[in-house]
Image (cartoon, rainbow, N blue to C red; front, side, top):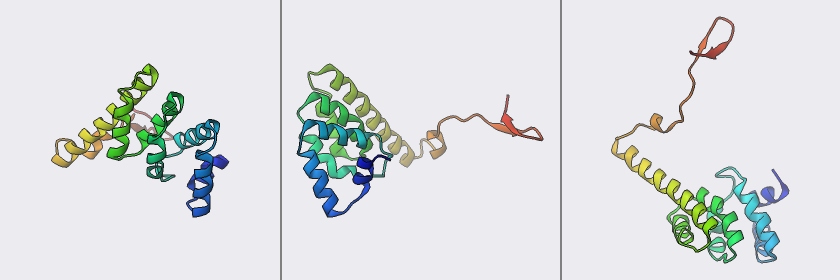
Amino acid sequence: MTLIQEMLVCDTPKMQAYLDQLWNGEKDEQEILLDAMSKMEQGDVNLVRWLQPISEITEPSLRLLAVPVLSQIDAPEAAAILALWAAEPDAQLRVAAQEHLDEYQKRGRQVAELISGKIKPDDLLPPQTPYVWNGEYYVPEL
């Protein structure tokens, strides 16, 4: 983890105040924070706290950096921001936001199918190559 990522994980009031100060600084600092957030594992940092500041971004290049961060936030508010950005005139931002919005909607459909019993949890796992024991090693089954 980078220093910025460690700072994002640290959830003390002083650290939050410092990160807010960075966010409200120069565009470069916002880029660094967004880049660090997008590279973190889901659940490592409370990204919901960043919904309001991210929603206020007006710069298209910063919005493009924020799209992967929004896609990690499993909340209707994040999907609403992505939907707004999917209607933007900037083509790159529009495409990126729409791709992540489609993925968010797909997850919503999968949840509904799981609850209704149409699919099983194992159906959501990626396909895996079966392995067998050949007496010495596990090898892919042919």
